[in-house]
Length: 329
Ligand code: BT5
Image (cartoon, rainbow, N blue to C red):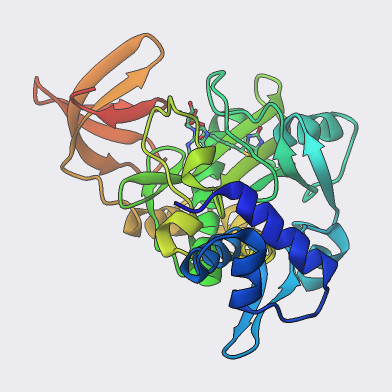
């Protein structure tokens, strides 16, 4: 079983001899472990995003550490109309949604993107929390000022879900499914969560913040032990590190196009893309909405994005908000 402290020693040896090749033999002698164990550590470090070159007969060479997200670098890659024209990256925030809501209150422009390397109080829905360790995942929020009534704001979740699904597919090859209303899943495990928040009066929206959390290089040990739902990351699904930079660029570009489409044509085309990623029809589930829980079979999603559930009475109920859980939970 490879030990993490050996990993630290390997990193130190690479740091002491930048650009040099270190043979498997030297590493195994310095660490007092077998060459197979050295290789396992190299594989584990690569999985964490370290770029390590291996050349037969010469050994290993460190090319660079895990990516840091830098605002200028992201912006220079973006060809968006609106989203990310203003973009800030922080090492640490309590929650990107909280910061984006505050900036929205202070008058920041539509399209502002707030990114954090780690969150100390990452938010899920309904007061739940979002595990947000540093260096591995994407935590970002997009500030929008759409001219739509407050009751249509939940529709924007479909825009971010489709954008995030396409970004994961393009940048990492991971194919996702959507779970109503705000999750992306890979083989039934949650890889991303979405959280909309808004500031509005009874019939006018001041601003909306769409929060997107994508698990890119999170390892099994970094997930909380009390997850409501099984979870995964790109690393766990593919065995290799995903590029946060490539995912964020793809995400903002897809989002920019889909949001423009939403404003000009409405929800229909986006919802039909979303429906193609939705495979829960026919499943018997338990839907919790506040204190209210009902069991039923998923019939589909209507044209406004409400979940249609056939309950034991045979009636089809329309659910506007809630959590979908396996029926036996
Ligand atoms: C969500 O809530 O899925 C919305 C998550 C939104 C996170 C983003 S990150 C950027 C932005 N800034 C924020 O502060 N938030 C947004 P919900 O459906 O309530 O799911 C939360 C539940 O998912 C928790 O109660 C855990 O059981 C589980 N969970 C927590 N962290 C997770 C993670 N990293 N991956 C998968 N599941 C997680």
